[in-house]
Length: 235
Image (cartoon, rainbow, N blue to C red; front, side, top):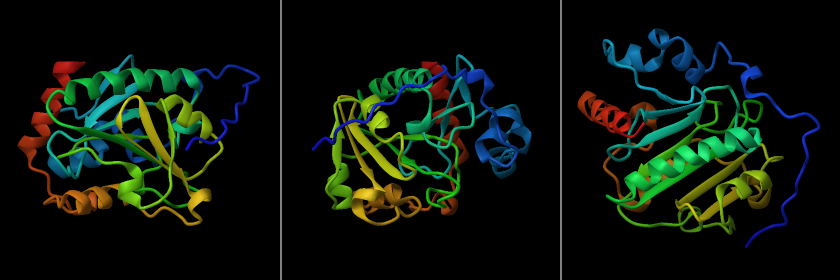
């Protein structure tokens, strides 16, 4: 089912270059002070940069705590808490990169992309309040409604879904196809969405042999380097 889309007009176009980064954000630290990042402190790679940039606006990088090999993250360089609140220009740029990576990965196995859109003031999400999309190879196709056992909404594309969710401070967005995006705002299910709920659901559904909590995963250095090399071959 698809709710009516509420459209709003910006009085003044938002200049992406004016958006700020924050000193306490995990991703902002990695994008701007890589030596101080969790990735470098955890793995101590020398001269290895996890993030690769497209037009200096979008970062693509391997997930820490990979549920499946070559699990990736896609994030804007600027600090925005959820993609539904991002300016349209940035949303379109993210969609372009997402489509390119998705189409590469989908030639090998089914792929899921998902976002837990949340804000720091409501305290949900994975603890990193910088917009990011997970891109995860999965064993088979699955739906958000099947994972969550909830009635969800759907849209023919991710941009329309973000537009509908633009006033929502907490939502799940999920897809295994670029032409069908499912989403669940918390105000429709009457409860807060717990941290890493989609990681936990995917682990349970597919019986994956990895902890659902990314903090408990001990990623092999070689697997992260392999994912990094894969990204470099695409960008």
